[in-house]
Image (cartoon, rainbow, N blue to C red; front, side, top):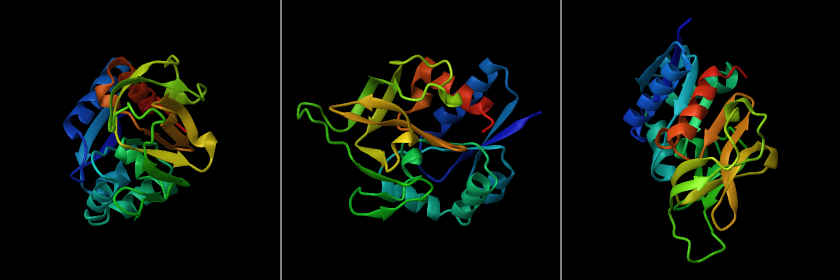
Length: 216
């Protein structure tokens, strides 16, 4: 049976590369998946899975999402009420938080009890943004989305801010950059990656394939 993945188009994110990565991961895993790039709330409601990308500042991304009529409500209904699997990428992950502290204080979707604040490496020689390849330290290898991904696998990051969940059990994998930060978070049918799986080669494709197989 064909599954539809709604890739949310709200003016933020590497949509073409994310779509290609989703399609490639599905093909290589032998999954019957249609990726639908959409700004239509009704298409989101009909989707079997939802992916929210995000690039740039927290407030800009949240504002872009709110500017699509009915989209925030459709996401709430599809993801939180009907419990369809959800993947947030980079700022798309951060938007699940209650609040973001980037250029002021801005409300997020509030799906997770978490705040988004600046990366503050203990080593002043480490540059911000954190950009490039770094290791994933898998905290909860039993989570289906991390199945078969070895500890210390490399993923590609580009960010200056990170999510800080109030509940540490939400953190599925960490990354170290002058101190640990949340690289993968999850709860129930929600999962998010601070890194870009669409740019993370084998590690990213493995995580996407796991997400497409996942039935929380």
